[in-house]
Image (tube, rainbow, N blue to C red; front, side):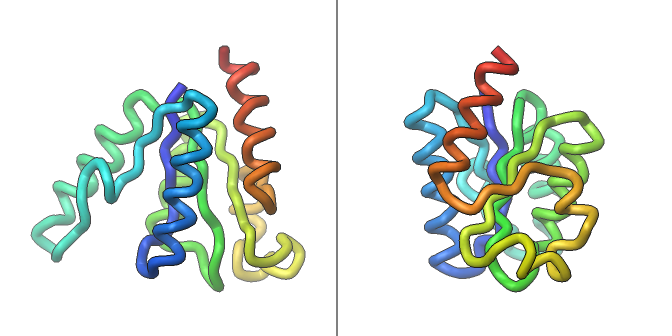
Length: 138
């Protein structure tokens, strides 16, 4: 099984949470695709096509699930796009929001994001959901 890990990476805290998701997946035997690790960072407009092809065209090829980090005041545009793309491709999505409850963040997350995925609050809950998907997807 392979997970696409989506989330913002503008701060050290955002990167740290992404790395915690990767470590959890690794402990469960789940391979990961982490866009900035596996494709690199976009350094400007001339990198846009390379990033899109690497992250989306190649990155989604063999992913079975998408895990989206939803922390912060707003979900990143790329993360929201990746969630929608996964949903359209019938790839299960699990969101994790550790910094506030879904009810408190509902206006920022939007009904569309909340309605499109299972959202958990802790890494323990995330682990349980990943295990369920491992069993379901075989």
